[in-house]
Image 1 (cartoon, rainbow, N blue to C red):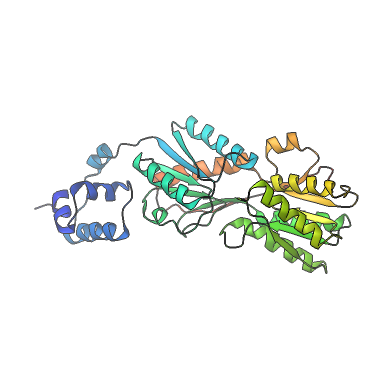
Image 2: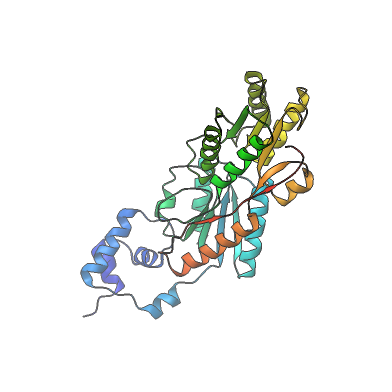
Length: 325
């Protein structure tokens, strides 16, 4: 007699609903539960009815986005572009603004799974959130290394670091300092630091790196910037990991009497459309934000069709020449 879903549930020691959730990759399920169900299916040689599965698997047409903040030109443009593209494909979007708080991110993740989203695009940088490993949902990461089977969309961070550092060197800077996120954050963006250090050493210059934590409040960040100038008053070049920090660095430097670019040359990173309007003079490495959004959405759709699709994508960057170098 052909095995039924009730037989699988009984052998696995779980409910029929849980078996259905495993088969349809819905909601949070532990690795242990997933294995028990698959083992029972194998033992019974159970093959779900494809037509029945299609009838059962009602797509919600909801996609979750979890990002550190939308109060930043880079993330704001990225989220806006993804929402627009998803809407045009018939999806509605639920956005979680995690503020890089792991508890908040975990709460958003659980809430999104409760709403039975069809997939997730994640750009927050908290580590060790187990739910990401057990969601059974299609997930795409942007500039974040999560699990080896989750595809990552990023810009060419190493090339960006090379271009920024070499530009400063070519324009006469010798005491060049780089600011970056804490090294414990697992992100392709850390390659900016590697490129900076490699380029400095290649040119016979000493790398100097300071951490400017993305989550720091304004006062803390300004004090950290002032510390850079206090400890290295002879600095003549700065490669800053994002444009918002670059704007604060320029403001602090001018307050301390540095003339830009005569005394101090500055290169930022991101190049969001809003930044180029508000800070047109800032020389920066431009990430292809709209293209990153397009690729992330297309990759997620592919993951929904084929959960083994795990192709990483690295997109080219370029320099925006302002007047800070």
